[in-house]
Image (cartoon, rainbow, N blue to C red):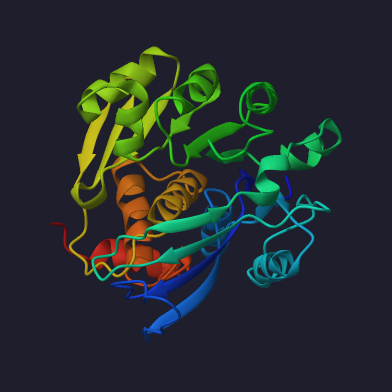
Length: 313
């Protein structure tokens, strides 16, 4: 196998500024400390982090035919990511977001949907896309063409080929649940935030949410709990709550994507469950310490060092 992971789904260019306390009136100007561009999205942010964590990573998604696409593809290649399965679509813009990051780390967003809405994985790409032992689908809910039956076809193919499927979504609500529920029997690691898990299931606690999704076919649920850590529930009965690290948060953009990447790297390295959770949280924690979805993470070794030295809350 040529790749360790294929990361399918939502690829976005993020433009981030911090700290933003207000939008100036009329044509006014406020001065802020930092503006960055990053490859983001529940696939884009994840694939950059898996590459930084040392995995041979294949990016599978779509960009438009514009200057944003040039930057996204160039940046992924700079990180050693294989972009040969990225589609460049004419006549549509690259999906992009402007994020105004508040001093407390919150990040109100303005988004152009763009190319990710027009993306599917054609059968002629299956041999390349499913070459990796781990397949991550990220961004369900903002993948208009791929969401629904096309995603089910894709994940069934991954399972038919014996792959491990990890899954995350974005901006999920009760409507998104209709897209997600049929996919659960094909998902080995279902990794939404607890807010998304609650909104889709109507359940009130991590335990009840996990029971809901496991009953519908997921093999394992891993919920990110923000400042409260993470919750792991496997159909074999294993239940683990992992505390969060005590860090100074700058920006929470991409923390979920980094957690996904950390879990994927942990699976690749065959870590035990408790270590895997701590490693994924260390990856997310590193991203929270800087601006943008690729901040903080430098390498597998430095993420491991953070995991071992940081204190829990």
